[in-house]
Amino acid sequence: MMRFRATVERLGPVPIDPLVAWLSAIPFTSWPQQTPLDDGLLRPAMVNDPAWHGFYAMTDTVVKLCQAYVPRRTKPGQRLLSVVMPGHSIPTHIDKVSASWWGRVHVPLLTDPASLFIVGQEAHHLEPGFAYAVNILAEHSVENHGATPRVHFMADWEW
Image (tube, rainbow, N blue to C red):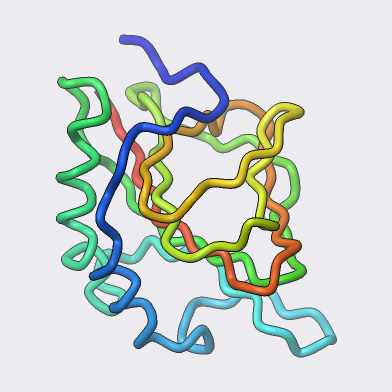
């Protein structure tokens, strides 16, 4: 059972309009917040609660469509939503995964050309409407130098 070992690989198109419309109706103030700093700015964190605003129900179709891009015998695992606000970042880190983990698929929903996913020493702008396999076992980070919040749907795939 091989894991995804490249850095970033564009897999193929995924229709995102229903997810974008759903998320547009949820104000960032209702997202779980990271520990706020003294500046009072919003810092939404990861969402992984299946019931949060119907998160899993709303993402079932995208998960089914992504299945066509990952190894045939893998199954979807954890799902996540991530927001990085303009001018903010996620520091360099390596994620912990299960022994049965194959890889993580990102589907950008809202982004800015100046929002970057950095893995290894390479910076990538992931375009909305496409699925990407990303290697979260390599050091990676996110920088949003743009004017738009960076919102990604993510799903892990396991053997």
